[in-house]
Amino acid sequence: MKRSRFSDKQVNYALKLADQGTPVKDVCRQLGIAEATFYVWRKKYAGLGPVEVRELRQLREENGRLKKLVADLTLDKHILTEVVQKKL
Image 1 (cartoon, helix red, strand yellow):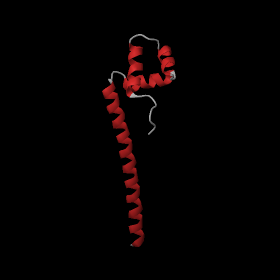
Image 2 (cartoon, one colour):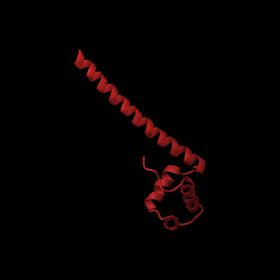
Image 3 (spheres, rainbow, N blue to C red):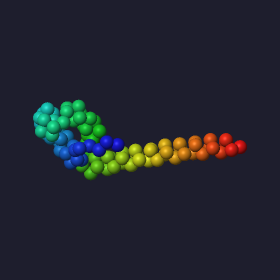
Image 4 (cartoon, helix red, strand yellow):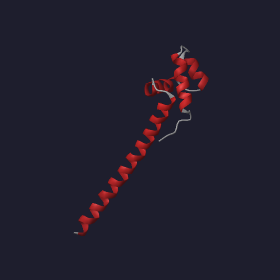
């Protein structure tokens, strides 16, 4: 999973600035991000504090690792069942 170059605190700071009335263009220019990136952040992290954002990101990374592990194990199981069927 691609790691963001912005920390959880920076994301939260950008959202807080916009909520306080700073124009989105100015916030994006200050952080060096595209407006689309800002709106993606707003959609994902609206109403969350920095702790919740960090936890959410950690849970998504763990979920990705677990999905990959399940896919690998499923593939191994499939290969082993084919080997057993060929021996019979």
